[in-house]
Structures are given as C-alpha cells and as structure tokens.
Image (cartoon, rainbow, N blue to C red; front, top):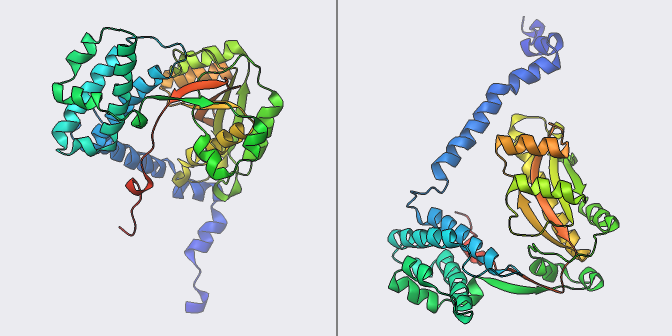
Length: 342
C-alpha cells in the first residue's frame, strides 16, 4: 500500500478552503499569545514609581530632565516654571543615588545636573527666588548642580540654514544637525516642499516591500489645534503651521507575527521623513501618538482616519526662526549601547 498511500495533508489542502486553513494556523488564539507575551514582558520591566533598578530609575530621571529642558528652551522664557517636574526629578535622583553608589558617573545623573545647573543660573541671573528649588535638593546634590556641566543638559540655540546648503550637506553632518524644533516662524509652509519630502522618503524599506505607511497632512489651524489638544504633548507652544500624521495600513500584514511591523515600518519611514523635511529647510518635531482608547476614538473622528490604519506618530512642521532655542538632549556614546557577541 506504500505507493498508494494518500497524503492526508494533501487531501485536507484540496478539501478545506485556504482561508479556513489560514484561520486555523493564524487564528485569534495565536495573536492573543503574541500580544500576551509582549504585555507580560512589558509589565515585568517597565519603569514604575516604586522601581529600584538603576536603569529603570535612569528612565525617570531622563524623563523629568527633559521636562526641564523643554521649559528652558521656550523662546518666551517663564521664570519659576516646572515646580512639579523639579520635585519629581529630585525624588528620582534620590532613589537613583540609593540604588547605585556610583550614581554620579551615570549618564542620566550628569544630564540632570547640566539641566539643573542652567535652571539655577538663569534664575539667579534674573534675580528670581530659588527657595522652592533649594528645599528640594540636599546639600550634596546642590553642590553637584552648582558644578554641573551645562553642555550635558539644558538648552542651546539652533540656527536656521538655507535649503541649498542643507541639500549639499553630507549625511553625517545632516544627521547631527537635525534636531527637534517646537517653535516656528509665521512664514507659511509650501505644500510642494512637503510633497518633495514625502517623495524622497518613499525609498524607506518595508517588510517584503509592502509599503504600509500612509501620510496625512493637515494645514488647517483649527484641525491642528483640536488634534494637539487631544494629544496633550505640545502644550505651551503655538499651533504649528502643519501637522503630519504618519500611520500604517494594517491590511498590508498577513500573520500574527507581523502585529508590530506597522510601527517598525512606520517608524523607519518617519525618520526618513524627518531628514527629508530638514533638507527642505523645514523645522520639525516628532510627537507621540500613544493614545488611550478615548484619545484614539476622538482623534479618528476628528481626522476621519479609517479603522484599518494605526497611529505611528505626529510630526509638527514649520518654517524655522532665524535662531531657535532647543533642548540640548545629549545622546549616549555609542560604546554605552553596543555589545559584541554577548
């Protein structure tokens, strides 16, 4: 019978529709398993208010340091801003010091000292009362703030540059120059410039070249203001002239193993788009779309975004000022994030 044995799998393939076989192999159960694995891992390792791991505490210190940096980089500087951020940063630094005896060597600590140094000196120069800030930090930390390296944190000035020079700039220099800019001139943004940047970004790779990324551009101030009011991450800044939404069409994906690919492909595209906008002489700032269910629903209704597209990020876009104050936002050295054969 060996030669006459019918392969059961072959029979099944002929009798059962491919759509049914696909649902069996890649059904909701499989997707749930993938999502649960990620959720459990994220829940184990995310940084929490009661975390004691130094790297988790680095996260909190860097987050609150960036809050201070954003206040320092406002063109319309508001003295005594960020009292809650200062208190949160003080608590994070205290817990980091308890977790690591060598905390003063950590990147996050040195970055915080740089930002706090600028905060302190700018207020002292303006003759502002720093009693509130002084009470937050022990003497040892206050001395670290006094001697903090301002090049490690705080704000810096970012000069505009002609597009012709940017287009001729080697990529190594362009990538260093590109920074997140949150304040823009009143000069309108050309739709042609946006389209040229998008066209250049079309070279971005994607899984099996399925090109899931979609770009939605808004230049109606009312819509932009309403969208950012829901997003809540651009408070304190003027409404940007243009808001770009980067999204991914979920219909481009085929298995539960690709459930995160929308954000991988969309993220790569967004980075290319940021460089392309820079080449066009436009200032830009990526903004997260990590929405709650309510924010998701309200934003979809406002922007008429279909259910088959997922949010990747916003990008605020405008023409640059002659010189713009920006967050210093120092980066870790490459040696700090690379491991070989481990």
